[in-house]
Image: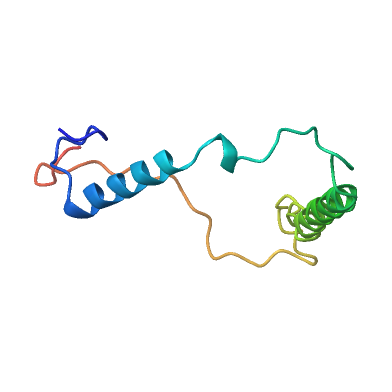
Length: 113
């Protein structure tokens, strides 16, 4: 198993890279490092507040646009409830003869419900 834990054998490229990195690490000594000094100057550049304000304004504009387009295209007002048609104006139309209740008697040939 290789050091990455994948369980596969290291490739020749991996072996060359490891050897090169180990050689470079051995070649660096205390004389190659710069002396330790506390940082000087501003801790943060002056452009950071400008960036923050710009990002905040862009975010505010995006929220305002979202609200504008959401409210502008809102739902239509509800439809009025349905009403019965108005009664006809004028005299009623004459009917033929009056309808009498049916007194039909079922015959034996007709099926009964």
